[in-house]
Image 1: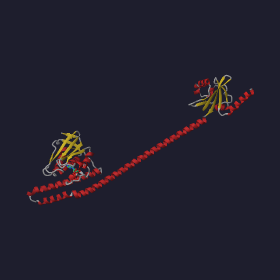
Image 2: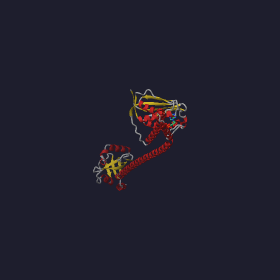
Image 3: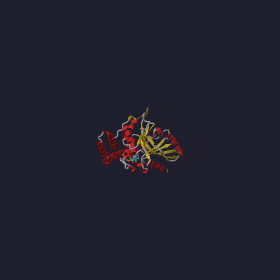
Image 4: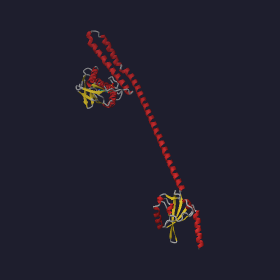
Length: 411
Ligand code: ADP
């Protein structure tokens, strides 16, 4: 029996020395009673050097406080278990250095005394490998992040490039469109000159020829009549030319607006005075009476062009012996001017096209015209923050209303 016991001890010794894990056995007082070669080497001790030492000697200081309590509780429960669940465990070598371990605790009893056998594995290599993997993953993630950033940057640059190109394309298309419109304008102008200028020019020629024939002093009034005709037809042609120049400037973006402080009556009177030459027999323009003391700050040329177009239209599209009212209403920081005629009016179904360039209503085709006046008035006024609207009934008359922003001074 003793032989067998001794053999058992020897077998245990051989086994414990043969395995690579460290074996440390402690008693209830947590004193080391046995350690195998692997454990001694792992912790840096000579053979038997650990015997009688407190278990604490193998545990880093920071774990001392919690450890005895854990081992005590463990001895009470007496079941085997793996230590360090969910947190890293460390062992302490003789030289004070620490290293990561994994420990399994196995309680047992001999002759009524309780012991715990700790199976300790040095997991430095595995930990290092884990660390390397973590670091490798981290650097991989970093690289991916950098690449993603670079990619995003490239995509952003590409998008910018695309939008720049689109913008350039848009500009080219826009300038092509303008060029096409200007060409169209020139073509229109040429055909207009050949048609629209013919009648007034031959009228001018006739009047000039006739005026030359009246040589007697008594025939002065006849001469004056013809000279007036010449003046009015020249004015008419001049207005058409001005309208065309205006479109050309609007289209090529060369319009320069110039704001001046002007007496409103000066502009209105000048326009009406010039339009008087175009009046048909019995036609009359009613001046606004309330404008003598009003000064405005606006582009004089644009106001003149707008009023000229509207008043000339009122004359042109109304018959003899009709009245044209010019009504001025000063508002807060704006002026509103209405041109009211008793003319042919604009057919309801054509009213929506009236501001389109070159558009002329069916009922106006017998009168001379180009269809550009209202279009440029609208463009200019809108460029300057103003508006133009109208109300019209066929056979009854039309009211065109312009409104533009301006500081008003009333003396
Ligand atoms: P134009 O008078 O040279 O034809 P406008 O642009 O000034 O060109 O006017 C466009 C069209 O609007 C005219 O052809 C005409 O049909 C209509 N129109 C403008 N003013 C009046 C008005 N006071 N009464 C009737 N029709 C008008």
